[in-house]
Image (cartoon, rainbow, N blue to C red; front, side):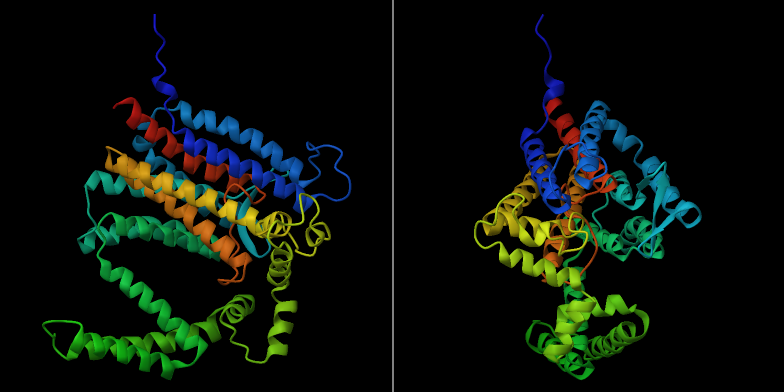
Amino acid sequence: MQRDHRGLNFDWIIIVLFLLLLGFGWLNIISASHSGEITSYFDTSQPYGKQLVFIILTFVLVILVLALDAKFYERFASVFYIVSLISLAGLFIFGKNVNGATAWYSIGGMTLQPSEFAKFATSLAVAKYMSDLQTNMKTFKDQLKTVGIIVVPAMLILLQNDAGSTVVYAAFFFVFYREGLQQIYLVIAVFLIMLSILALKFNVTVAVMVSAILIFGHHYFGQKKRPNIVQPIAILLACIVVSFGVKYFYNSILQVHQKDRIGIWLRLERDPDALHEMKQTILYNLHESEKAISSGGLTGKGFLQGTRTTGKFVPEQHTDYIFSTVGEEWGFMGSALVVLLFVALLLRILYLAELQKSQFSRIYGYCVASILFIHFMINIGMVMGLIPTIGIPLPFFSYGGSALWAFTILLFIFVKLDSNRINEW
């Protein structure tokens, strides 16, 4: 009798890319966390030893995720979402405070961060809701309900003082845009970001003047049929309110460390000496990370040979700042390889998402790609000083069991859904 191999029809390109990122990530955790001679890679007193245990358990997790029927994830999407909300809410009672954020459960000496797992649960819920309604995001009612699914966990995470993980939920707007959200929302978002930057970098007057030029220029030259003059005036008044609101929010609402991070990014301090002092005292990690990356040159200093890495110049380099280790020890070539691997993974997920026969699988695939993209873009941009410092991990690279397991579940649920498409072909 011929054996049926249909159950093994997984996308091996994604799996190989996953393994390459996971293996290279662990090598860099070794570099960033080792102290002196390495006697055993299973030394669980060191981060690289603990991470190896996490990686071994990750393979067990992969087997479990792939063993379940693909329909299971769609059928129980709401259950995953509700459980994730309960776990987030429970942190306010049972959570452990680490670095000012109450975002972890402490279980037998090990910490677990439910906000990481909430990402795949929210992705399942979004895909389930949108596919059940067959919504194309055209009506305001559908838009409001779908946005509500991501706002609830995002607000719970924000209340835990974990702003970095909250930002990740903006990734879902890429999904909504793919599923039919009107382009005007994207235009408004870009315009508001530009307006906020102008108000902070220069002043409210400059922000309002630029807004007026764009608004009235579009009113008189950008449309064949000009609407009533009241509309551009109302938009300009809204821009004035937003500009003053941004300044007030920055000066009176944000915490000191948050203002300093934005201030460094936008170079709001015009005194070079004061800016340098701010970098040294407030954003020491970023300053040392930039120096480590620049010291790597074209080909890097070699594995375990990074002087700034082995010298522990970048605090907690094995977590959010792991990419600075790549830059120093593997240079521009190694950094470019990491970027290419991530880009290849993202493109492969998007390609397969478009091949899905069910709307649920397609939407979930876009959720996976969007979340991985936001983490990849923000983490690497942060480490290189291109965007404000936001503490989120680099997928499959940064040390930590919660993030690694959550990213693995997120990715391999899609691998399973895609396998179901292949097997039913």
